[in-house]
Length: 145
Image 1 (cartoon, rainbow, N blue to C red):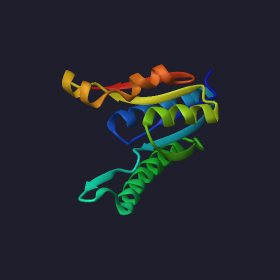
Image 2 (image 1 turned 45 degrees about the horizontal axis):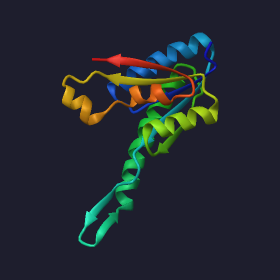
Image 3 (image 1 turned 45 degrees about the vertical axis):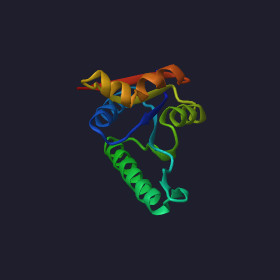
Image 4 (image 1 turned 120 degrees about the vertical axis):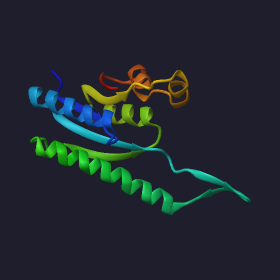
């Protein structure tokens, strides 16, 4: 059974579903739970002289992701889990797979929302689909519509 579960959590509706499913699996298997929120790398804005980095924007974004992470940890704590959590910065697939390797995860849980149009699917891409290809362990994708 799964002894070390990594949940990639972003606070969205699919993320909430993934959190609930992860909780149920972890309860059954008495698993150790790890929670990550993946923040995109700091953006550089094009200005008159080239690229401009804004530390205030990055700090505000980091606080937002820390809030999402703390909410997920709180909800897991209410269910009796003492989950460990971390905000990661970078490409979601790279960061999730690297963290899974680092903690020797048996299962990665992510949420996924079906997008209605092919254009939206093409433009946005699918973290869960790409994650399945690169993960070092099993991946559970919870679906919301």
